[in-house]
Image 1 (cartoon, rainbow, N blue to C red):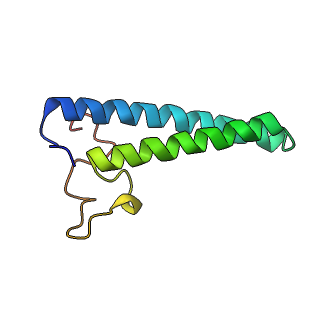
Image 2 (spheres, helix red, strand yellow; image 1 turned 120 degrees about the vertical axis):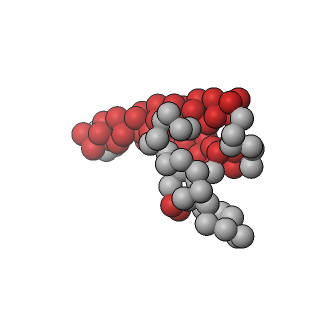
Length: 93
């Protein structure tokens, strides 16, 4: 993992978080559309594309910045979920 104290790393983590938020918003909107039009093949394809992008971004975020959720703790040696500022503490991240 990167050095959490450096300014550049925090900026990268903040940018990754913003990208994740945008992708997740698009996923939610696509799900709402699919609820109304469940047979829309283009919408379903778009949903799967967004999910793949989210997984890649989430993996990148967690490998560089630490776990995004409690399920992202992949360290075998210590519990990392509480060792950094919480994801919603924007000023600290």
